[in-house]
Amino acid sequence: MKAKLQRCRTVWGRTEQRDTLPGLRAVTNAVYQPATPDGSWALCDADGTIIEFGANPMLTDVVDEADDRPTLFIGPLITHYGHFLLGTFARLWPLLTWRGPKPRLLCYAEGPLDALHAKWATLPFLADILARFDLTIADLVTFQNVTRIPKLLVPEPSVKEQDFTHAIYGTLTHYTGEAFYDPVAVDRETRPVYLSKARLASGISRLRNEDVLCERLARQGVDIVFPETLRFPELVRLLSERKMVLGTAGSAFHTAVFAAPNRRILALNWTPPVHANYPLLDALNGTQARYYFVPGSMIEEEPGFHFGWSIPDPLAVAAEMLERAHAFDSLEARDAAEDAARWRSKWIPGWKPVQRWLERRL
Image: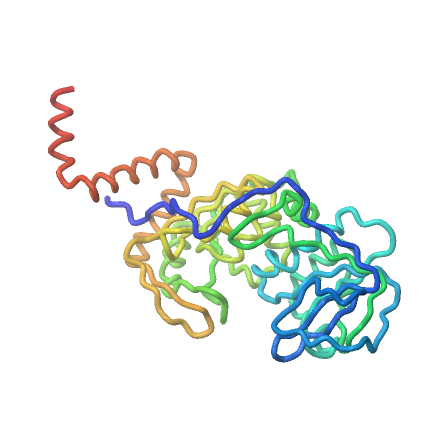
């Protein structure tokens, strides 16, 4: 039977791994210019030199003074789960070695702080992650007026999407996630699990005919799980305890960097190149991930998502995904052979007669 899946061999972006620490700047009497509806905001040092900013900052005189509690700047508070992990969370690395009173976390966000706290409280992953550092939603702050901050630390991110990760990000994710799974239970469940987006109302991408794929997988003994219904610790535990995880490439798979090392993942991707964020994070935790493209996939509009996509013959794709999952340890050799055969078919149309001639001669 002709293979339905084609191994993703190229990467969209860079995947540099850095052993050095990101930069960390201590600023005395920093000045925060609040966010406005047009996206303007600024963070300056005492001399007025801009440290970070958005849009077109309009610098004005200081009107408020913050108390002297130490403050850690964490950039924008990103509410999308995957981008939060690769953005906001990536600045929390100084908490690993923090000494003294716990800091407040300064982020730029528009609106009254009470309303923002209520909004952020609806993000369960946020509270679960902050709790790991003895912090709560109440420790997240922003200011409505131009404010002087006596003691401010400004860390550089430990990850840049589609570009690089610092090793400290792996340390940060390991520390955060290790409290949520029992090392004795790692890989104890051999029944595969499939992480489905079928019930998501909005997001980046969605496989439009995923329900057909899931129905077939479920009939073959695969557990179908909807990640958005799980708390962050539950998802970390699930990924740690399952020996094999299936799904479509998406933010849920970023959680693997928090789980037990050496996760085994087999995922469908909507294009032949895989987004660099996946191999960037996979490398930090030894994740054995195999990403596949289905030739003939179609990109379409999808309400609530940036785009939707469909695969041809989802029943056959489901059968092949499960077959490859069972043969996971031999996939490297198998995929390499299929790549070679595909290359010969594309670039050497007359290969088969030549192959038969060579076989007779040898």
